[in-house]
Length: 316
Image (cartoon, rainbow, N blue to C red; front, top):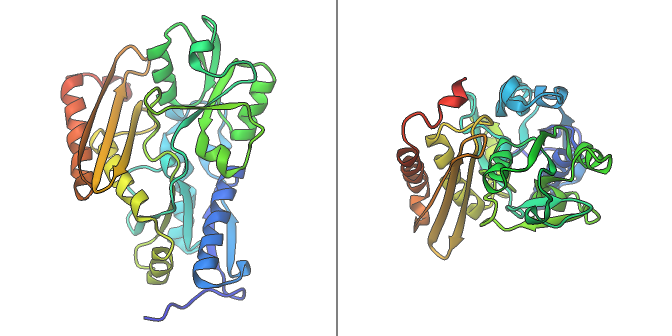
């Protein structure tokens, strides 16, 4: 089958949020597609879409609707035909997509670790007692309070630049961002220290870019297949199955990471109370092809260990 490739006169429309990181991810997608099919950049148009999550930055995500806040408007525009594909940070993506849309293309995964960011300190252990720590992540908040219950964790919303300015203004002693975002924006000047995943297990799918399309768009399907990274897909199949079995959302402190070693997949997972008072963690290994099954099994192990009522808070 010959693909009807886009041209400058009839470009492929790539939908994205408007933050510097989202735009960097959209540009990477365009560059990979252009290279794969020997097309000029002008054959692709990057369409910036403002989402509810971008407009409301003064409240925690869990108060205004969770992960879908960063995808709803983009997916509506794709279903209506205004855009052809959408580029997402996978850690922002709900495990289920709206009817008619598919999310089955992933670019090579970046650094999965969290970054500790501070002009004064290089790690959590160095923070003085009762230090003010800024983060908008319920997962990071719970993990921090689990390790250091003396810390004073305050809400930090906004894009990467906004959060860095708050740090410069002395609102907090440190904050946390994904290493992947800092790397993609080439922000070498940021005072950061990577946190080993054994000390702070990252968010599900952290560091991965996903590309969504209409299920019936075979041209987009064929083009995206040329830039899909198989290993990232294998890792995310396990992580997102783990998340789905836990019914995870932005209201649930959940962490997980799948890693490949030859033909074997290792998956670690953690669930926490939002106040960090309780944490349950475990791991599982097996053939890569069993990744999704292992993700579900690990989730059930942690749910059984946590016992009835552990997640009652997230319906309050």
